[in-house]
Structure formats: C-alpha cells, structure tokens
Length: 267
Image (cartoon, rainbow, N blue to C red):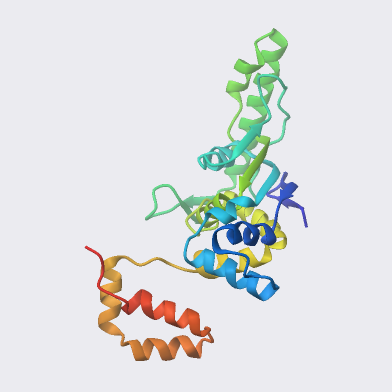
C-alpha cells in the first residue's frame, strides 16, 4: 500500500522509490567483490552490512513521500536535517481551513517534561480547540480581505493547521528517522506517521527491513560498564548455549561471543 491515511485528515503517499534491496547489494559488491549471486547470499550480505553498521550501501536507495500533517508534527519532522524537503508556501497560497482534532486528549507526563501519558478527561477541551480554530481562521481571512500580505496574515493560524510537503530521504537516514520516531517516547501523532512510512518501506526493501528490525529497531547498544557487568554474570559456554537454542547460525554465534568476550573494554 503506497497511500496510507494518518490521523483525521492526514496521509503519507509514496511518490517514487529509487532502488531496492538489489541496489544495496550492488553498491556493496563494489567494495566487497562480486561473490554474492543468490537471494540467500544477498540477504546475508545485507544483514552483515546492517549489523556491522556499514551504512553507505543503504544510501543507494531513496524514497520520496508526499505527506499531509499538522504543523506541530511537521516542526518535529523537520528537525531531521538529512532530507530534501519542499513544503507548501503560505506566502504564495491561501492556506486551507483544515485542522487536526484529536479523538482523545492526553495529560502531561509526570516524569517526562516533554511527553504525555494517559487520557485527559475534559469535556471542555474539544470546545476550546474548535473555538480557537474558528476565531483564528476568521481573523486570517479578514486580514487577507484587508489586503494584508499572505506571509503576514498566516501568523494568526494555530499549530494544528494541516500543511503538505514532499520529503526525499535515503534509506540509511530514513532508518534513523524511524528509529527515533517509532520509539515509545516519541509524540503519539508523529509515531502514526512513522508507522505508515515503515509499512511502505518494509514492502519495498523487505530484506533491508528484516535486518533493520533485527539489529537496530529491536536491538540495543551497550556501554562499556554494561558489558563489564554482563561479562561478570555470564560465561562464554552459557551464552553460546543460549544463542544456539535461539537458532542463530554459526557465524552469528561467533560474532555474538566476540562482542561480549572478545577482549577487554577499550579505555
């Protein structure tokens, strides 16, 4: 599916894709030689690149999306500065009267100053939001009718106004975006857009997604102190047995043992 509705009026639409799993393998072969020829070998090579953080071959794949999202979501989105972006201009166009209205309000999180949690049961919240929308857009239209420049009249519009943009990103940096925006601590609204993008990416680069999910999205990195603690709790024999019981191939078992027991932490 290359068009996915998001929130109440938004969407993510795939415009085009340059490359796929084959492009990653093709780029890697320039460095590693032409030895991989089967799907199984291609999957193994992509998995090797992902788990060893050889990222440049993933940059050979690019996705271009057309996105419609509220302004406050887009301002978070554009903090990722590794994409090419073109947004509808409020200086040239009269902005549409389209606002995001949440189904449920959330209360401020107790431990996370920038986050939210749980439902906020307040019957007046919806009314307050719609009141602001109506007054703000009426003021916007009045300013335009008076002859105020569009670039200034837009100042009165609230952050839940919908905007649209095109977003082009290589796969390596797209995976980084998804790692941050699929995380539980990311704002709920932007997580919905990240999930839509993830579905599209998964469909177009299934082997790369499989490795990303295994080694990055579902994995964790460990600090020097954390490694030292684990080494004190485990023996190589116990760890190796557990890895084999999980069905890891021999090469992955050796790599995992090397990660944990291969040498002292660097100073």
